[in-house]
Amino acid sequence: MPSADWDLFQSLHAVMEAGSLSAAAKLRGLTQPTIGRHIEALERRLGGPLFVRSPRGLQATELALELKPHLAEMSAAADAALRDATGAANSVTGSIRITASEMVGVEVLPPLLTEFRETHPGVIIELMLSNATEDLSRRVADIAVRMTPPTQGALVAKKVGDIQLGFYAAPDYLARHGAPETFEDLDHHAVIGFDSPARGISELPGLKRPVSRETFTFRSDSDLAQLAALKSGFGIGVAQTEIARRHGLVRVMRNANVFTLTTWVVMHENLKGSRRIRLMFDHLVAGLSEYIAGSRSAP
Image 1 (cartoon, rainbow, N blue to C red):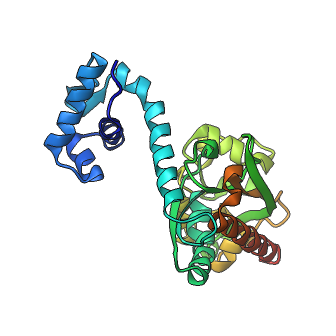
Image 2: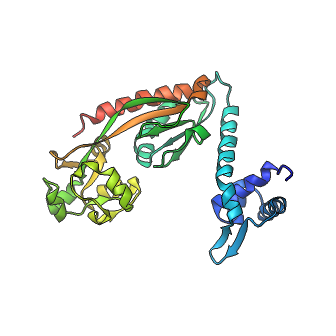
Image 3: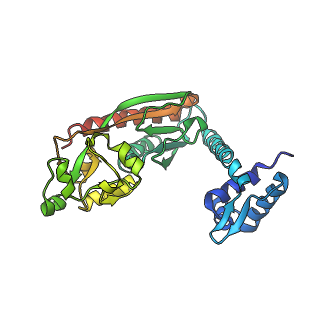
């Protein structure tokens, strides 16, 4: 097969990500007919259809699904090349792409990133929030803040400490329902937790009692939704001690096992030569270390 234009593959990737020609056109800044022509050209070169129409919209064929992981890698590599090209290796200008969990990205990182940007105004910050462990070897991001030890090779990693968590509730909830003192008391309270059974069990190892989806009265796999429910007075939930203090939440069940999240800052070893990436890496290590130290004294 003759080599296909990367522009065509970009359009295919956009359609698979966006789900329609019109949405892909907006994503790429092109017209819908142009995206359609790109897909048709690829289908001619590949010798088969990439999508079929259904009442739910465009459905990817097996051929398209086989290409999907390769398209993701090509897109990540192109984005990384663009970030690298925005600034010289020894300068502190250009883009830095950081990935972190929802909670850390929304509640912890913003002041650290603001401080860095004030010191280095030539830097552009790209923040990708995901509770999944992104593969930095594919340069999906330049730096990752992770709650699990890195397992991929060719990475530079720094452990910054253990984030403390505990059981908390809003003052108005406790005024209405009282405070639980034991795990057994939770049977009489609204409990905030996960919608996915597998995640609920793996994320709450210290309960020493069966945990399932039915354990929770409020269920969401979004950490931010859980925090919002906790702040609103819905029930009892788990929160980082520093975030709980910031939002005026009250610690309950102080004698219960305390959860910890071991926290790492990680980057690809090829980026050690980039001054802006190295400076951001060191800045996040210092800032998160200070955050974790402060959380130990939080109520």
